[in-house]
Amino acid sequence: MTVTVRFAPSPTGHIHIGNIRPALYNWLFARKAGGTFILRFDDTDVQRSKQEYADSIERDLRWIGIAPDRIERQSERLGQYDAAADLLKKKGLLYPCYETPDELERRRSRQRALGRPPVYDRAGYRQSAEERAAFEAEGRKPHWRFLLPNFESDPLETRRTDVAWDDLCRGDQTIDLASMSDPVLIREDGTYLYTFTSIVDDVDMGVTHVIRGEDHVSNTGVQIAIFQALEASPPVFGHHNLLTTRDGEGLSKRKGALSIGSLREDGLEPMAVASLAVLTGTSQAVEPVATMDDLVDKFDLSSVSRSSAKFDPEELKSLNARLVHDLPFEEVKDRLESLGIEPSSQFWDTVRGNCETVGDASRYWQAIKGPVEGKVEEEDRDFIAKARSFLPEGEMTEESWGQWTGALKAETGRKGRGLFMPLRRVLTGMDHGPDMKALLPLIGRQNTLARLP
Ligand code: GLU
Image (cartoon, rainbow, N blue to C red; front, side, top):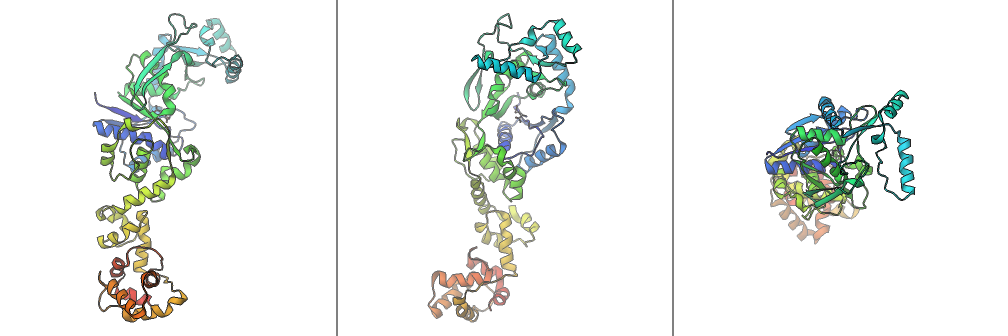
């Protein structure tokens, strides 16, 4: 059977680094197995789902390097959900309930006060046809619950019913269906809940592995029962830990700054974001991985830890810098060009070690081409005035800096920082930057002279 996985976001907002984690896990899993990756929009909530969010999610996935093999939209599959719901109704496994949210809440409070778990008591299941008709006559509309298989013959006498699965990340898992309420699958307004539509889709689309966040673990027991009620065998499940910032702050609050769109605008490399999103919270070191193929080789779902996956947003910057330092010229050539730089490998090799992002190259290009606002401290004025007359003859080469500073050292007795820093400041306007020995030939004789007063 071909491995088939899906990433199923609701297009109700932009995705952030925490959401890209399950997307990448599914993508890497599919690539490793030569399988299929489906991007499936959970867009049955018509009020909150927006096309602009779907477009932004697709764009973010492509930016990070995920090219879905198939794109599906739940809003286009309502007929399939109706058919599956009819099947469950025919089997007596979906029953109408007429309680209002207030009535349900009051009942749960009573249960809690009595020290009982707030599990739905199947009051709706017990109602007669007359009682239901009376509710309908009042103008009430039913929501529909799935009858969990947690009883022997009488649904009103539940008994412990363990549903077990071998989780790809968490190992053996068990959920007792008697501890769960019958889930609502259809709302009063006739719309379906994600837990149901997602199963119908997984069956129809031949999904073999469901990889998602551990916030879905408790749904899984219920979902396995629904797969079985639909006469389908459940897929393999894997629930990974969720990404949080180091202080334990959930990502929802920081979504803005850590949205994929804003990380892209900050000039981060997709592979820096992917490396952090995939490797944090695993037994593997969080390090920059240069290509998606390398990440496919490295990726291992069983290395995901049981504890939370905490990261410091600052780590992204350092991972990014390490990736940028190793980027070969051919890979950045076009990007340099689009920054208005005349790209050459000599330039890139000179500046890349000082770039945290590729965009930083612009500053150094500016320092080479000018105009530069050179800085001269009062105490360096005489020294700088001398520097002009000691500049080696001819075009600047790799040797020029050594010859120039050697001569100035002999003449003035200056050394170290006192020798180099005034020259760097006057030529580049900066206190830090690439090696002057490599920079000087790029600045060239003419610019150098023009910057020396
Ligand atoms: N739309 C659900 C979510 O984003 C999908 C969960 C799943 O993968 O089953 O949480």
